[in-house]
Amino acid sequence: MALEPDTQGVKDLYKERSAFVHGSFFIQIRKEMEIKDGLAKLPSPPFHFLYCQKERIRIARVAYIHLNKIRKGGAAEFTGCASVLDILEHAVIDLETRAAVRAYTELVLRLM
Image (cartoon, rainbow, N blue to C red; front, side, top):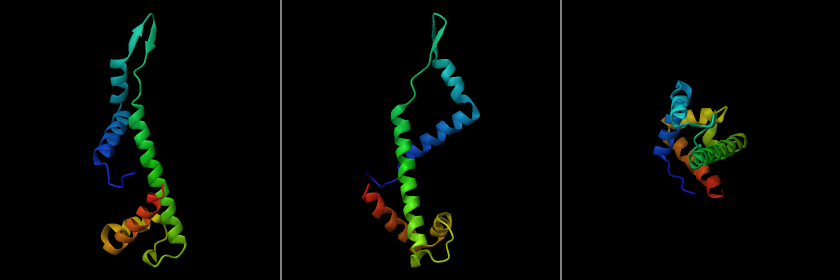
C-alpha cells in the first residue's frame, strides 16, 4: 500500500461531505432519481469511492493507535506530549518530531 498522500481523494471526500452537509447532495439525488409506476429508483452510491475512504480511515486509526502506544511506552521523541494530538501539533513546528512520527508511522503501515 502506498504511503504517499492522495490529495485528490481528500479533496473529493471534502467535496462530498460539503454537499451532504449543505444539502446539494439531496438535490442531486432527486435529479438522478427515476420514478416508474409510482416507485422511485435511487441512484447507486459510489461504492469504490466509499471503500477508499474507509481504507484511509482504517490506516489513520492504525497509525494513531501505534503512536499512542509509542507515546505511552515513553519514547524520548515524545516527552512532554500528553496525547497523540499533542505529538501531531508539535510535529508541525519541530522537524525532529515530524521525522519520528513519520518513521514510527511508516514502520507500522508497512506491516499492513
